[in-house]
Image 1 (tube, one colour):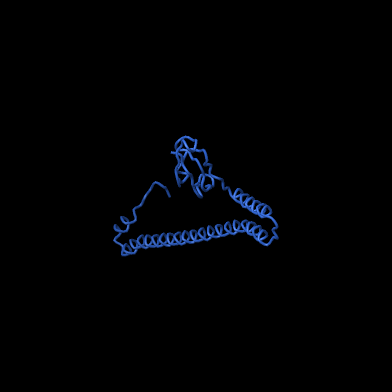
Image 2: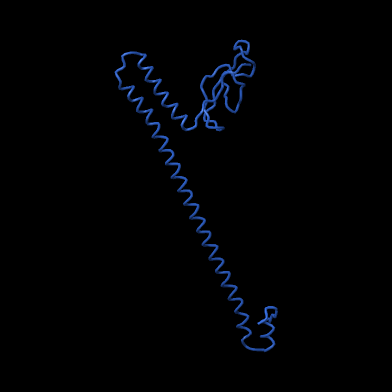
Length: 174
């Protein structure tokens, strides 16, 4: 049959006056209703798949967070072990105690460095509200530095890349 020839279905059945015209017009409606039902079913299945995907992703993320937390806490157990050894050691001099504390602090700083933690540079630097928190001020003449410069660090600050963990608490020259 030639592809360019179209025969209208309704015109043909209406011209014949056949009683089957009602059933033929009902066929496209049934096909259309079936198609709508199929699409609705597909949409519901896709919606369910997306919900399951979200749940899987949420569980996966929660598991990764828990694993990372466990890994980090395991590394801090080294510091606890060092402190326990220091407390149970028979310290005969203050210098021995200081040496033990120094070694424990060194271990802690190595752990922090492995995690990407860096010290916020502060003393002698221009005061920057992104990294510094002013806790006091001093005359720049007394401090011997330019105005709006950090004269003293009361408590060091820490960051990971460009994210601030804790601001450096500083005395600012004015």
